[in-house]
Length: 129
Picture 1 (cartoon, rainbow, N blue to C red):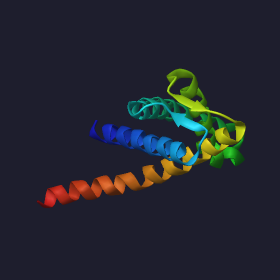
Picture 2 (cartoon, rainbow, N blue to C red; picture 1 turned 90 degrees about the horizontal axis):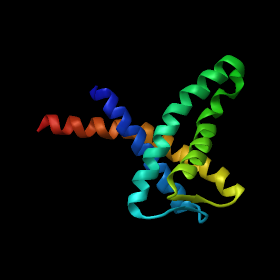
Picture 3 (cartoon, helix red, strand yellow; picture 1 turned 180 degrees about the horizontal axis):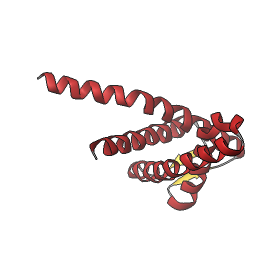
Picture 4 (cartoon, one colour; picture 1 turned 45 degrees about the vertical axis):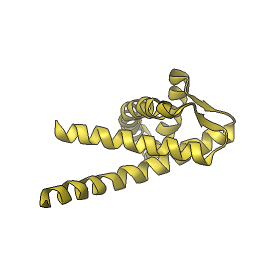
């Protein structure tokens, strides 16, 4: 149960980092209000966590050569659904949609890769004290 909660936290934080990065980098990508970042990241993380395994399984069975792009595709779809559901996210323009999917995916992937190391280091430092 603890591992599940840690993975859930990392998934949420990765989405949070990606959403903030896209908002800072792209002028036509906007999240309305400070608390809305948490709301948008939570919706995005849930949608992407459900969508990614589904798309990955589908491409492995039917189009193995597309497996590498599943993260970007699921990020784009999750952004679209989050935009429809939340009302706190607005993305304007095709280029912004494509760039947002790429930015959220890259920053989210980096955060998902680095956060476990930071959390483990923090826990290890606390255990030493």
